[in-house]
Length: 150
Image (cartoon, rainbow, N blue to C red; front, side, top):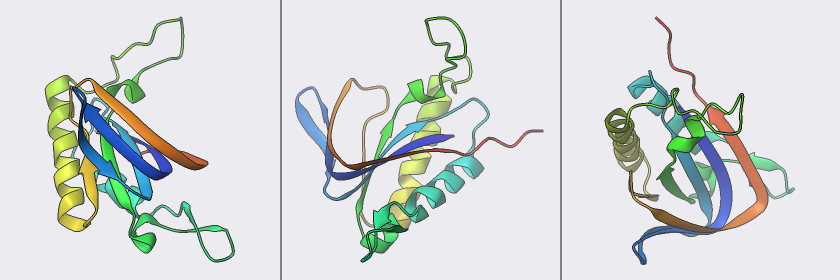
């Protein structure tokens, strides 16, 4: 499971011209679900996103987490993060989870985030979303939790 975590001063998601989710200072996380991902990967990714130290402390060092600053978390499904771009000029999505599995796991991630953290908003799986943000820094990290192998 993949999370592209971006520190923002504000971010919002609109569908059909209507804002459906927004946050102030915090993190926008684009979420990619890979084939084989499950609850373990979703839980670990959420733990990493909430605890990853991407915000400056009093000395300006990235030493504070989203929890520490009580920032917003905007989760947005982004299946293209799971694309294989290793060859050619067109991405392959064979490593992405099938749509219904991806939807279910994204919704599970959102539910777990809302159950354990008070400032969570989310985009809509499968929708044509328009995302706007003010990137802070810019600070962006690619977090990946590989799925367990048999």
